[in-house]
Amino acid sequence: MRGYWWKFAGVLIFLYVLIGGMTIPTKAGIISVIPGNALSGESLNLMITGYNTHFTECTELRAWLKLDSVHVVKSKTIKKISERTAEFLFHIPSVFPGKDKVQPLTLIIDNEIDGVFVQPNAVFITVNDSIAPDSSDWLLGSLENLHEAKGTKFPFRNILNETIRNTFFHVALWFAMFVLLILGVYHAIQYLITREYDHDILSSSYHRIAIMYGIFGLITGSVWAKFTWNTFWTTDVKLNMTAVAMLIYLAYLVLRGSSSDYDRRAKISASYAIFAFLALIPLVFVIPRLTDSLHPGNGGNPALGGEDLDHTLRLFFYPSIIALILLGLWMSELLTRYERLKEKILLKNQ
Amino acid sequence: MKKFLSLTLIHILWIVPAKAQGDSLDFLRSTGKIYSVVAVIAVIFIGITIFLYRLDRKLTKLENQINNEQ
Image (cartoon, rainbow over all chains, first blue to last red; front, side, top):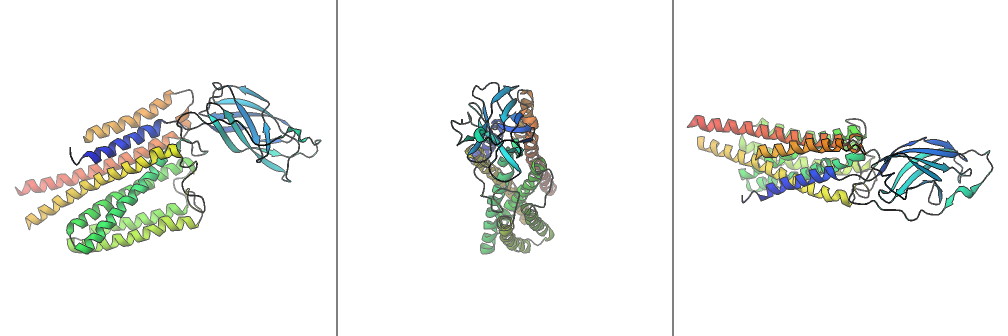
């Protein structure tokens, strides 16, 4: 059993991520708001379909339409239809601040079970000038006594919905890949310094698993993109640059397979690995940050944080990275042992 | 160990969506794109299985090599 504990730890942590990451619900959110537009000065009956909401179970259901930090309308009556659907009646004020003909309102719903949740640009109001001005309908000031959602829940993000859980797998794969690549480069450098063949074996094993993780990362990212960006591949910089980086690394595998002279192969692939890693850093970390990207943390967006990675997600995200690193180390250890065995047999035969 | 591991994983991959479907109160997981998460986990699992298969084949080759020499 000794020497195996970290492998089992990897499996257990990954199981924890799988079970916890799949069973914890997301917070409440709004899926659809009908109708999506209205005239100013009208009574507006909004039919709202929620997600993970408890409209009938809760007692303090409230809703607002918000224009900006001071202009808010509160709903007059609320008709609960089911846990997930309800009708909210609003009196849209006839006077709107600002000159825009069409102004977007944000829908805010609050109850004591689901906490507060919002849908930006839920209703577009066409401002109608002909009606007599009456500004008394605006509820000026900020919203008070808003609730927090009960229990541990993942954040609800529009478009992302449940796929926010992919953070534990797709993103963690790339993090784990980087750790394995750093180990691979370390052993490549060690090989060039010491010229011990064992370092070449270690370096190639780490690289193989890291490349495998990279390919997993590309495929899982592609699946995720299909569900959120509605296409398997976009022209997003990060995608293309990562694909280039992966091609560079695939060339590493080809390079290793091309030469049968062990010494030369080890020398060439060790130096190639170092250059590939040096190319990877600008391709993945620098270029995507210079332009717009759909990935969070690029193109001027703040890095992963806020609602994209809140503390409940971190509870599974970091363990997932550790688990994937441990599993990767296990797999590369198997490869290493295989290569060592092969080398031993080869030396015996000579 | 390998068999146990794969069985556990298959178990999880099947149980979780099945349980979510039974929860008809909020059809949470079916519309919430939950199956993309299942697909992502399946990709990783299939990938690791392919890795294991290839390693298995390599080892068999090595074994045969040793056995032939003896």
